[in-house]
Length: 220
Image (cartoon, rainbow, N blue to C red):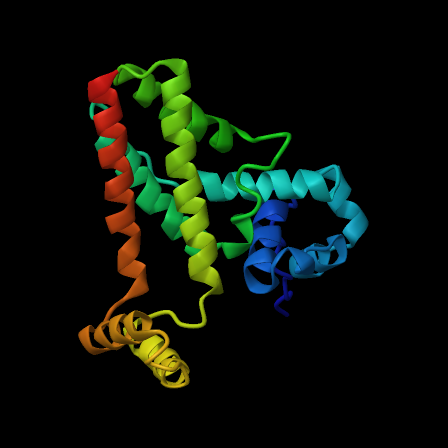
């Protein structure tokens, strides 16, 4: 007689708890993140999670750090502009995957190693480019604010591509009196006609910011 064996469950650890929490946040936002929900996801009692995480703040610190860990940092760090551009594009992509993280990326009081490493590497590449501490902070804050702000606006828009923009925008603009708002109506019509994609604005704006930083560095 063959004895039937039950598959062994992977042992519970901090990484599994945080990965489960990340999945829940991706599915339902931070509001969906509860110890009971994480426990159900892992098939364990909620109380058993406390062997691996202290509390919900510890979980938030951990999953924000997982998002920071997804930001790709170029191996060649000899050119500050190339580094900041690549990191910004990668950060925006990570925030599109995890939109709940937008408001939390710079708010954690107990940052994890990936969070700290991202900040350290970015400051270092700016200092190596000749920035003073103050100028490096100006540049970092400017780029960071742009990336987070664009990601926040992008996730709240009622469209995600050119076709959806036209579908949403054309009926809206049709209600706008063209004699009172002629330029708004004209520009909107041109954008709908050319297949304007809001997502393409990100790199255009990013390059303008990097151009400004480059000019500031030349003049310092």
